[in-house]
Image 1: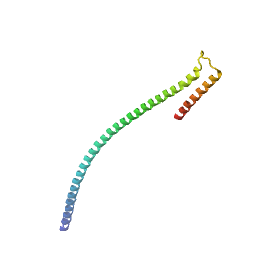
Image 2 (image 1 turned 60 degrees about the vertical axis):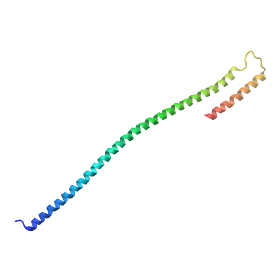
Image 3 (image 1 turned 180 degrees about the vertical axis):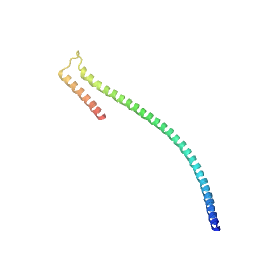
Image 4 (image 1 turned 30 degrees about the horizontal axis):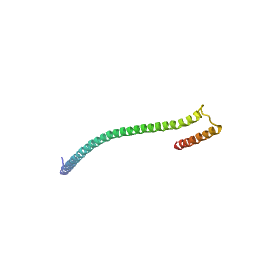
Length: 133
């Protein structure tokens, strides 16, 4: 037969199981509440992440636009520099190529003086070009 001690032992085990069940039930409620809060936080973070991705795309487009504008500006400056270099080279060529007019009579000394003047004029321009670059 079943003894009184066995019944008390069974009763203690059942009470222990009920206490464990109650504790697990409250722990489950706490975990479900925390899970809900974490899900809400996850949705908030997903929304922020989406906004950051959109902002990143806008920033990237803005940076690319600025870089393109800088490239255009650099090209324009380079074109201006090239055209000014061509203009400064053209007078030198015309001075050397033209020389004295065929109908003008000049002495050898005058021609030599004009050649020195043309050389003196062209040297600073060449030096200035080298200083710029």
